[in-house]
Image (cartoon, rainbow, N blue to C red; front, side, top):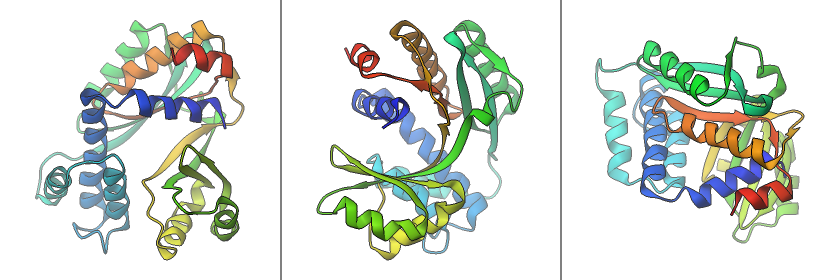
Length: 249
């Protein structure tokens, strides 16, 4: 498992406080609202994008009334319209960062992102500067329960599974982004509900870093993630077991 994936698991454990939970709810609420506005209505049975967003909301235990408010907001005529923005740059130590934002005010977002880079020892770069260092992948997480990983892998290969691994009761399935819909359909056919299904940027060749660089870069990542317009931040750090142990302290 890559250092990026391991750190994601640590963040989930460390991020169970109210502030982090509220931020996660905000992100998924935006996904739901946009899914209704752009995906074809407020009925998840006929809107696959909305169905996926609701599954992700359930995966982080978002209350039903919060989900319904996000759906209602998306169904309202007029109101804020969100646009997707991507930013690329470097954190301390030359660590590559790729940001995905969803915003109703592009001027605010670019100003905030630029300030976050400038104040934390980073450098905001031009489009395409680091994107080529990552591959877009579909990442599905399902509760293992009674599922046999080897049997599940055989079932999912035809749907585009590139990797299937189990860790601490969670099975993570990786596909190419072009097979995202195929995998979603396959899991539904097998009556397996994903607790999370997202498109992510996975580093091709992770960069080894020492603990000091990792701390500075990850601190910057966390500050960027706290911005309301930022949906996700990806990095290309390779976090060794030794570095992970220091970070987990």
